[in-house]
Length: 114
Length: 113
Image 1: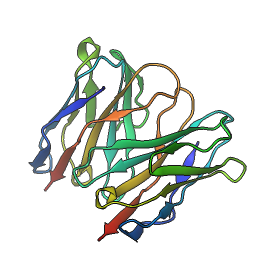
Image 2 (image 1 turned 90 degrees about the horizontal axis):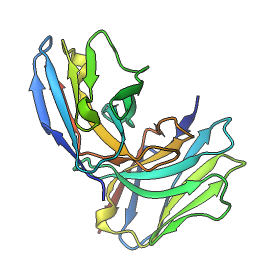
Image 3 (image 1 turned 90 degrees about the vertical axis):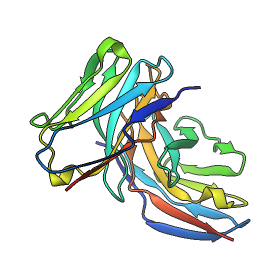
């Protein structure tokens, strides 16, 4: 069964500081997603990877957000500098490549920007 | 673009009773999947049930079943014999082809003793 580890689980920073999140898939699923979930909302996609390649990053605010997935396994998402509006839960999910595949979510990182 | 609407921000039900959560969607796609995800207070999103648009038969998973009305673009979730552990946010989600999941805003379900 697929599993996703995310770290840290919680992060509190002051605005204008940088922050990084890590996603470590336990299984070898090829597709990896980063979502942002604002309070009281459903998750919204930030970026999708197929192996090492970012195939959909249209919703990623590229002026301050960056992501990478080296070797097509683990991934990091970075914000620099963070703004108050970035406070949210950042979710990582994985799925097998192909059509209509189930996504398996990690527990998320709750970011609070003060 | 697809949209998913969940019109019930909160629902309450007593243990052992049945509750139905509503979801409507809008799409021009002909083949797609619909999902219900559960997100307990610990925030791990878990798949509850999935439905392929081409299948007329409604999906069921133990106490969870759906009422899929393709023409009406409606996809409701019925939870029978509700349990305290069913307390969670429930998200309806849409997936077409190689695109990504589009989620609704969620319904908070509270199951009380």
